[in-house]
Length: 383
Image 1 (tube, rainbow, N blue to C red):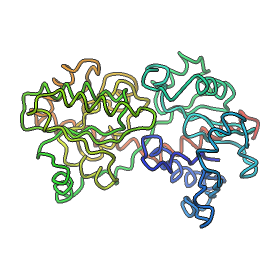
Image 2 (image 1 turned 90 degrees about the vertical axis):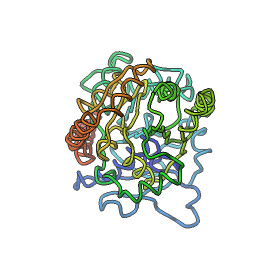
Image 3 (image 1 turned 45 degrees about the vertical axis):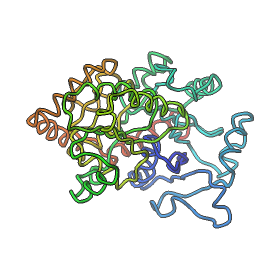
């Protein structure tokens, strides 16, 4: 059973992208297995629509026609209804977003990061009740999947999880989906957004750990008056006030700098690819990440990357990016200045990124996920 709910979020962040990829790639990686995509879809009750029908011959589509606004509070308070009451029997739940729905079956938790522990001020939506539930599920989980060694180390250090119960399964990327877009597409999107020819791009949701205030301050330090900054990402539900903080940081800059910063909001997949393809560099100086999908997307688009030297980001970037201290705007500015001024460096990083992204595929992630699931079934006594 795969919890498919994150794949249906109208504004998908990394968890939604991950869940979508798992649904597409895991069932074909295990053709003898039987998989079920479970989700909530009250609005589809009349039409009987099925969101994942036809995705794989061994993937069943099971929608529960209860509104999410009802299901969430109900299950939080009562632990009911159990998933097996809604969809029948199964061996295991793959909880794609930390916590599984209520169930008496075994569960494998996908723990994308521990930002709520490492930087608790960045995760106000994870209250004490959520944290207690996470600790309970972690203790009795049949297995835990994490996307990086850094996250595995955090789990062992903070929660004392036995390393043998943790499977490190790096995310992948669809390199073809992010191959460089045609120049005409790049120019169309750039002009529509009002961006200059040369720009640095940030991709991600607007939340405190993404460190956008520091990036804005670093951008203001650059002496290159022809370069622009594009901030591509929308507001996230758990940090609604952070957007205003970013706006205030931008508003405090001199007009000559301020006019060269463009906030695009959430982008379609086509526009996201085009904007990334035309960037001089991806700037991703996050304070903490369990992985860092935008780095792989930039590698696939043949775009140089600047990212942070902390958490899982060096693990993902390897030698294919400029690494900086995210707490130091001056270091971020120096890294950006070096990237923008040195074409040879950009070419070296482009080649290194292209080579590195080849090892991060969703097919490889799916095979490792299937192996982790079967190990968990074994631990849970199901085989």
